[in-house]
Length: 127
Image 1 (tube, rainbow, N blue to C red):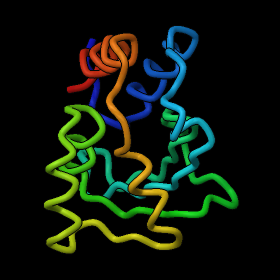
Image 2: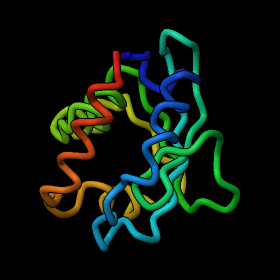
Image 3: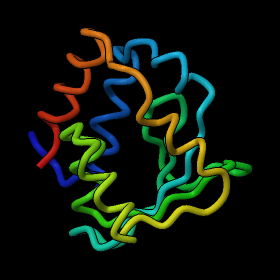
């Protein structure tokens, strides 16, 4: 069953897949990134990425915080469209606080076949 991106049922479904998650790319292994997603169907949501996995709430001590509109976050993280993120950043839709180099690390590298297959599972859960 598909759920709204970042809704509580979506987060529950993604957490249930954690044991199947492949090893993250080397550049993301130690990355912690706080993200506030604005304007979603369930309101604004605070999440963080930790080693490539979405977690609820912000992580204490994360070096970078992004504020991203819902449609851009969904396009970037679910549809895997880095151009949407770049366009949104260049037009001022994405706000960055802290270490901007961490944001660039998020986009670094080509995902492995296992990572792509796992991403397809996440995409299938997402409305």
